[in-house]
Each structure stands twice: as C-alpha cells, then as structure tokens.
Length: 301
Image (cartoon, rainbow, N blue to C red; front, side, top):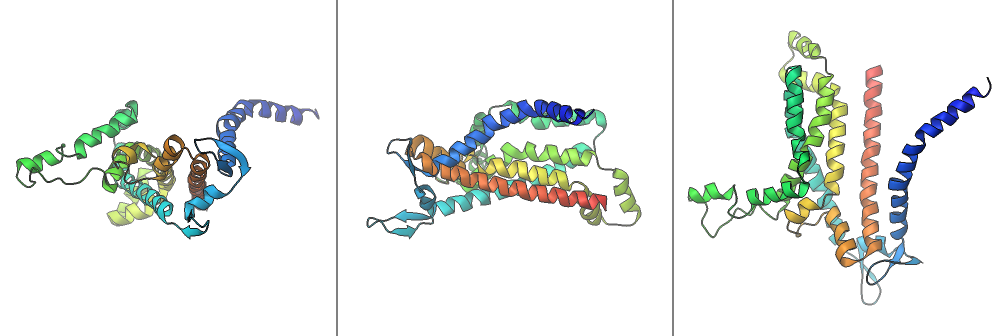
C-alpha cells in the first residue's frame, strides 16, 4: 500500500513525458540556443565566434564611433516603439470589430453558430502570403479603393491616395490576418454567458451601456484578454505584413530579425532582438495570468 503514491507519481511522470519532451526539444532548447547566440561574437559572413560578447545588446541602444566611443542611437528603439504601437493598434482594431461579431454569433440560434464560426475560420484555409498580396491589389495604386475616386474625378491620374507602404497598410494587414484570433476566444466566453442576466438588467431599468459595461464586459473578460493576447503577440513578431504592405520602409521587430539572419548575417544581433521580442511576450503572458487570477477571485467572491 505504501507504494501506491510512488506508482501514481511514476504514472503521472510517464504520461507527461512526451509532452515535456516536445516542449523541451522544440521550445526550450531553441530558446536556450538563441539566448546563447545573443551573447556571442558575430562572424563577418554569418555564424558566431564562441567568444562572450554583449555587443549585440549594446548595438540596440548605441552605435560605435570611429574612436571606439559609444553614442546613443535611437534607430532600433524607434523600430521597437513602432512595433509595439502597431501591434497595440491592430489589437484594438481587432477588438472593436471582433467583439460585435462574436456577440452577433453568440446571439444566433444554435444551429447557425457553427456556420458562422466556419465563415470566420475560412481565411485560415488560405496561405497568409496570398491573403496579404490581396491587400496590395486593394490598397495599391489604381487598386480597388483608388479606381472609384478616379472614375468620379476626385483623384487625378497622376495622384494617389498613398495607402500602400505605410503604417496604415500594415495595420490593415495585421487586423485582417489576426481578427479570427480575437473573435473565437470572445465568442467562447459569450457562448457561456447567461443571457437572463442581461434581461434582468433591462428589467431593473439599466441602460444599454450600463448593461454592457457592468454585465457583459466583466463576464466576457477572460475571452477579451485571451483574444488581445493572441492578437498582440503574433502582430508584434509579424514580418510578412510589414515587408509586403510596408514596403520594407517601416520595419518592425519581426522583419528586423528576419533581415539580420538572412541579409545582414549578424546572428548575435538577430538573436538579441528575438530575445527582446520574447521578453515582451513573457511580460504580456504574466499580465494575462495576473488578470485571469483576478477574474477568478472576483467570481469566487
């Protein structure tokens, strides 16, 4: 009988073994390699010298002058700031569009909900590169948006709206790409919502805004937080949308990492940027965990 707890612990360890092995091999080991490379010396044509160096992190904030002195360089800080700002804007746009869509689906009869969810997930069936190219046709010169302006004479033949190769185009691409990741978690929360509480609020003469802010939002908070997290993290590391829709002029962290490994061949610096990106992800995961604990404690009380 004394061996029963040990046997249970052994069975639990064996059951978790494959999952732990996958996490270790495909997630933990690559992160360790990336972190190690970020503290090494870069070779001229790619690769690393196994000599400890913090130059990759210094390069994020400073540039080295001819006399070997350091001068503050805001270039990469601007890229980090732009990445965070565009990811936040895309997250807010997805939330503003995704919440009404999720609410609409949740209010449909049970038979129709699966059809609407299918329509939401259909974009995932198409390659992301193809979907992004479609926005070049829509936003580009003489594209779908500009043609009506030319037909009506509001736009001269030599003029353009300048929608492409801008932060606006990148935001549109990010919003379109990741909006299903906002709709699905919010819908999962709204589907569990007891709509009798909404009716009770109306019976107690609460306005629509009061019902929305005091009943619907708090009860759907886990889905909102999860959706924001699922949109912000991939938007922060995206490189297809900034590369195609931004024209390479408006770099983000993802495109900067890709450039360092494929073109500049500066592996330590690319690894350092990837670690900065990972740090943002970890911070937002911690905020999500803290918010989830807070919402659960409110439910208990």
